[in-house]
Length: 181
Image (cartoon, rainbow, N blue to C red; front, top):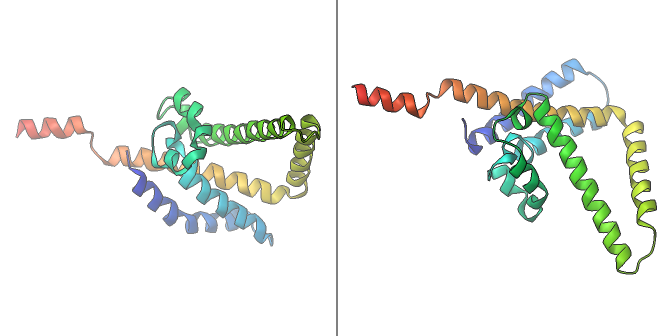
């Protein structure tokens, strides 16, 4: 299984190729959508790919915010269909990240309310969800492109692991070869 430097190099090398494929599949004049695709591809490739279930470079890259990934790291078995599924891995991490951000916003709004700034946490949270839904609806091409970039980076991570595992002989086979010679 390739390490973080290999995954990082593959992410950087793939971004141009993946953008070319994206423009071929979805040609349009929406530069913002292409930027969302590229941005989420790089973000997911460096900070949200399959190895968040271990004490990996991705996990540590979140710095103090990595606490949001701690439940994921504890609950998800490494290289399972949850973390490394071609579609399920990226989808679960995207949903997890949205849920974690939502919980953080609710806790922050609730905490500010407890400090005496009474503006109704439920109203503020509902308003944020309403505005987010409106932004996604009004900019659906960019939202879909961003989601596709996030998912593509996760799939690339899994493909890199699969190819790396197939190409690199296991340590057990290497030891047996050495012991027989």
